[in-house]
Length: 261
Image (cartoon, rainbow, N blue to C red):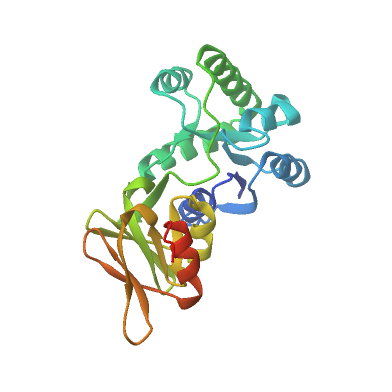
């Protein structure tokens, strides 16, 4: 049994890894963390065999987690990263483990096999030190990275074993459909298993607004505010789509759109 910890500040990213690992009966997920401080505590308390560790987290980065614990004390580590191709080539040469968001099932399986082999051969310390050294040298050679936005800029959608990335700036609106949320983008619809509340919290409030308990809309897609004789409210988007607006959200929506009475 391989005991695994998952550290990533994005709920969807954590869930993606959990779903993939759930297919393997030899894996036990012993905990998850959404920031570097909790990650350090989790690793020190639970001593996992393998850690999936996001590189770019607010507060404490993945590299700082490794430095805090000490490379010699780290379990096998698969970094989840958005590093450029130059850095990834260096990782490949050293045969170390990384995942680039968004990753597909095959790439995940490959990284997991490498980590499993390192654990079985008791090469964890050697692998982690080598990976840390490469990532630090890549960081120092690259220009400073822009601060990571606290909001989603893309959403990974899984369908029939394939991963499609939907850029958030292409989403027109989002609707609830039972346990799923449906992303409506450029005439296409993508379903993800996520609560509307969670999505609302992860989307930029300056761009998106929840006009109904089951609808989130991109503000710059709104063309017309609708008000029926019966007292119901709605919006018409630039593509002609009409969506209902809750009465208790109408006034704030008007303020967000700069409507004056």
